[in-house]
Amino acid sequence: MKKSNLILFDRLKNAVARTFLMENPASTADYKQWKGDDISRFQEDLLQKVKGRVSEKWFYTYFKNAPDKLPRIDMLNLLSAYAGFKNWADFKQQNSANTRLQKPEKNRFLIKALFLGLLVFAIVSSFYLIRPVKKQVRFCINNLTDDTNDRILVKWILPDESEKSLTLKNHCVELNTELDEVQLRITSPYYIDKLIKRKIPDANYTESIDLRPDLIALLLQHYSQSDTNNWQKRRERLQKFIADDAMIFQQLPQKEGIELFDKQDFIDQLCIPTGWLRNMEILEIVYQNSKIIKLRFRIK
Image 1 (cartoon, rainbow, N blue to C red):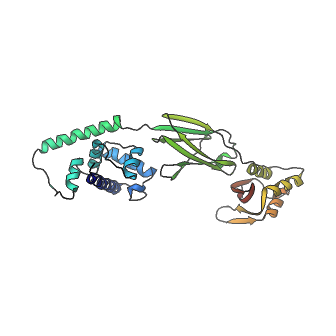
Image 2: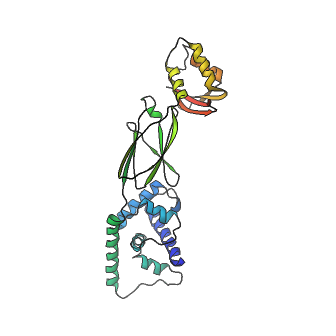
Image 3: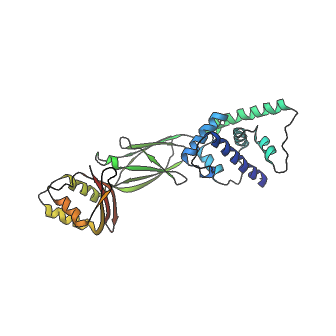
């Protein structure tokens, strides 16, 4: 492999990126920094303009990384056509450092016929030979309660380490991907954070997930919604699992800000039968040495 061919391939990638950015938005002009949405828009534009397709995995291999070899000739021809050239040979001729720009005057009919043949071959290859498998992946969380379901956050960790939020519907999340492996991060004030990393062997993959409940967070929520005859016992429990220097905040409605509590004031409000601290919803909870050191909540 000549080094000059890899240099020309870098020029082609820059030309492809400029062509894409002329009509499409992107998070950055540097194609090496493109993320999931940028890559998806590029795939759609390539399919619309030259009837060809590259997989997300192929893009990571040849665009986001520095390959030590060129892709197949049909892919080079496809990208060259997208950038406004006849084919890879035409691009090389017009971009070689020691070659002047020339327009061949002979055999134009044969050149056009060859280009059309290569384009047809690229289209067939794209749809039947290198077309990636689109996988439908579904994860369902088993042990959610109705009052904690809305506080579950699911993030899809993409190969470039960016994250994409997923919507939880009927205790499940669904995603479509061409990747062979997916990672999800599940967080909630009422459950222990969980990281899921799975190989996806089939085009349709479903898995059930169990979350470990955060018992202290659920106990706080229960205390704010129930009465008891043994307020002293409740107070002793709260004293035990809240750190003396804990930062406790109430998130006030809209833009009114926050209200800060010290430990004793918070416990008093939660243990007074007629107290206003009812129907508390936990927004954030942080532990250190099994004790709460930060608590942020709001009143429903």
